[in-house]
Length: 249
Image (cartoon, rainbow, N blue to C red; front, side, top):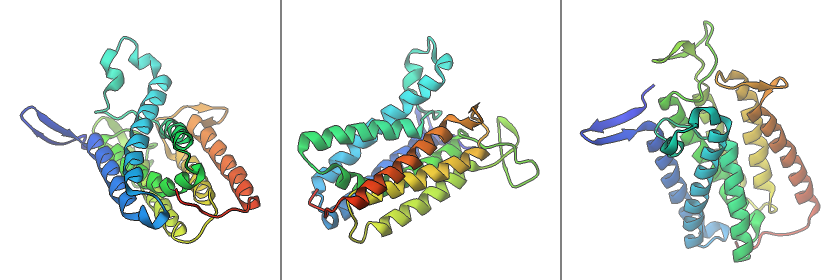
């Protein structure tokens, strides 16, 4: 665990914040690079990356605080303190999705086309963010029980580095989605693939987590993952029935 990357005088660079910023700027750079090839205006791509990132950050933090409300009673500004982590991906996804829906309606742009454009970037940003979780020591795995594990300073014995496993899985999902989006696809297909792959991988990796409590045999993220996988199936079925082509976003 290495929560602080650099410290000099009053300046401290935290691992979690660094990887969040890296995820943002990497997504921004790639979005602007591929915008023209996907019928997205460069300015729209850049603006939406910032907008969805901020909405996702707020939603992810809100869900975390709600799940750990007892830890924040009377905490005041601790609710906004991200130096030690504390984000829930599903909360961030839902907040970003709601923001995207509002944006698409106000600007009269095809919602599914925008979702397809940003789905690979979402997987990539998650993958980078999980590296920050590893350095920060949050979202840790179960006891390694004699297998390969990592010893965190405040958690013994060795733990399964599930953060890195999920990061690798999400990088693979991102690469697959980028390749998938290079061809001609019906609006919504890339989004459906993202929901299925990201939700499915999260479901199975949750069995390795050591910081979650179960509800009816599964964790809350696992139940949510099942909803995402089911939603992916419904969306894909609807997309395949609808005869339409990609338009300009």
